[in-house]
Image (cartoon, rainbow, N blue to C red; front, side, top):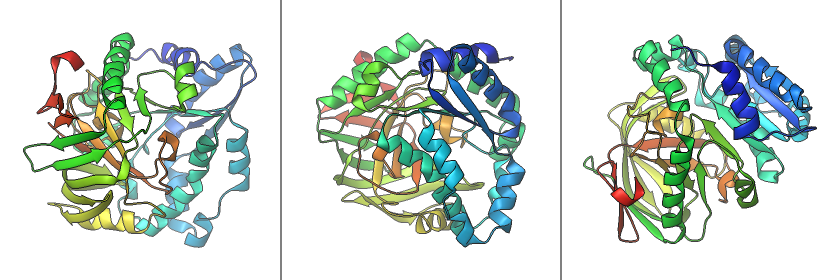
Length: 368
């Protein structure tokens, strides 16, 4: 499969983000995605926007995390903060390091320092007047780390970008209307998940491939590529029950069948078949509301059907839900943390105020 990257860059600039003449655009790239950043920057230049490309290699990130005194990792960069403050659009041309396995032996304390550094972007989005898109880019190293075939991973990823966005938007709108008029969501599955979530009057957002003027009025300024979810920041005090998350791969390590109890929205770890210590290490070294429920998301991308441990695609698997802990201030919530962690529940049954939305991972006909 050979993606049409010039066409993808054009779509990002004109359809997804509707970038305008005179807007300042910050484009973050890895060393292997610089070519895509160049294509996006050229599209910006053609319409009179002002792009700036910032590159981060795996080698730089690794050596920064392993060779820098932890106290310096936590000091915000004034230059970086100034650039982010000036940006009206932020485009991240990677959502994962090229070789995630390199970070598997780095401590939670050091990783927390890097998150503190990067939180500048989220603070900028919370202030308003800025929109953001995060673009994944699969690599052979990621596939090897995930234990999957690279060619299949690559095809799944880019086919998930080339979907019917009108159809996606229509399904997302139906689910948004259901959630907007409802108060609670009940999620169960055969593994033992049994969770009740209170929605209150929190706004319901959709990641349907574009940030429209209506989205901006609502405060929806975030977008992923691949796209495909409806999401909300729940009221944490009304969330209770147990969730079992099938597979999580974060910062180079696997967590299998992680079981969390939620009481008044706070996550209490119970057990995991594998990786509980890694979960605790990352959460214990995070800041603020790190263990409060942050998000309920519903996956909608029809081309993503397999869980592989790559969060950007896993959370878009059609017929799944994901629960996040940590920060949710960019989606209408009040949690403040340097951590936002999405975790997926497979084959859920989801009932919204007594209405069946999906059963064992299959949407009811009126919401499909």
